[in-house]
Amino acid sequence: MELALGAGRVLALLMVLTGPAWAWPQGADAARTPNAPLPAQARGSIHGVAGGSNGEVYEGVSVTLTEDAPGAPAALTQRTGADGAFTFTDIAPGPFHLTLSSRGFISQPVSGVLHAGESFDAHTIVLGMAATSSSIEVTASQQEIAQAQLNVEEKQRVLGVLPNFFVTYDPHAVPLTTRQKFQLALQSTVDPMTFLTTGFFAGIEQASDTFPGYGQGAAGFGKRYGAAYGDTVFGTILGGAVLPSLFRQDPRYFVKGTGSVKSRIWYATFNAVMCKGDNGRWQPNYSGILGGLAAGGISNLYYPSADRDSTGQLFTGVAITVGGSVFGNLAQEFLVKKLTPHAGKAGISDTAPNAQ
Image (cartoon, rainbow, N blue to C red):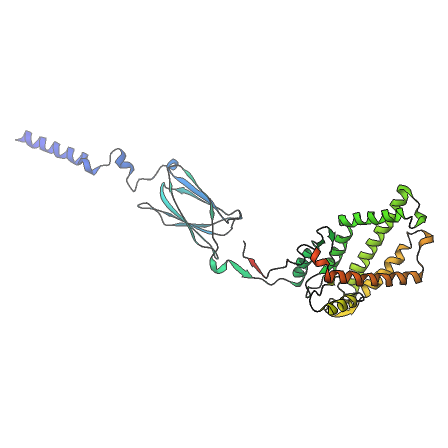
């Protein structure tokens, strides 16, 4: 009896010490215990970039990470850096969800599964712009509008070749700034066709022995070419930039393009001696007339002494120039636009996309 009781006590003690099999985790079952910490090498990271469809990156985008597993910690949130990147580290393996959001953009969800020890690359996550903020109204400054119109004028070429820069087909074109007047004049003087046409006329003068004081041969042609190009440069810079800036006048010809033939002929003739001021009012064309006189006076410095103009010849030359302007303006009214591809067909828009 005592032996049986002693054996019973020993058996009971063994049961207390060992316990039932189901009360102790064993093998793989122990690894699934929620309270057991994961080894460092089993945890991973998630990274990516917030960007746009054109390759731009967005700074300050809110990125929220939610882990989809039992006992997962609370959601983590961070903002993208200057390079648009984000990185979450020390993340337990398993399913997860990312949500990217920013003012003016549509929230972008991304889901995935992080494996043990993995560095998950979410790549570039493209954010779409919200419909309510996909465009904004902007008001261009007067200088910006003038520059846009000037860019159009600098592409105008008769037959697609000859410069037709000092002409606008917009009757309400914005006045040019001083810088823009010089830009237009310089663009005209350094245009390749200006050099070619100067050489053409210098060749005609050489063949007809105009300005015999220059002589013949290569030296004579070079002098004629230099004189002809000098006339172009001084006439264009003085009459198209310097004096228009001083007198606040617009050096361009404003094509009328509408109305009766008679009214357009009168308009073209009128514009040979009148021009539009920067204030939008018509006034005597001091810039063009004085520019012609000044350029003629300067030319006396490099023309042969026998071919230099006297004071009377200078004024006669200006009168001839004014007459030539009448014919040039008439050509602009009735012919040149038809020969100028895309003349005045571009402009500036008052709306622009809200790009980041």
